[in-house]
Length: 159
Ligand SMILES: [Cu+2]
Image (cartoon, rainbow, N blue to C red; front, side, top):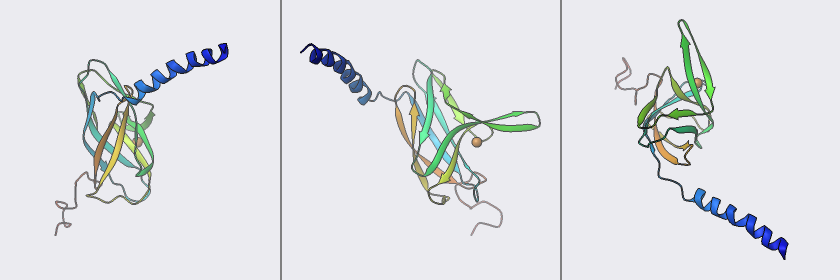
């Protein structure tokens, strides 16, 4: 009998914890202007977007999940003078009441192993995972290598 009571005492706090986790908090970080630079062949595609933290505390972007790619990593391009390299990041902190941009030449998503070839003009759903427990869905537009939504406007390519 004492054993059962002890087990209950252990189980109850666990239940409470899972209830809290189930009730996902309202997202304090908004995601906007998400797009993916489609690269030819096996070159990984970059993902770019804007984050806006409307909350009073810093929030980390822990990662992005998507069914369209086998791998989605947080990267940063770092340049010192003439050379630049990419480093992989566990998380990127969005300061309180501040925007943060993922843009070419800086923070980006490195998207590898596309499940099917990317189609310029299509869009890909992604889920952004934050340290406050929020999961934010966003739709990311696939653009061509020069960052445009279609081939129109490229010399010799329109019409
Ligand atoms: Cu990269």
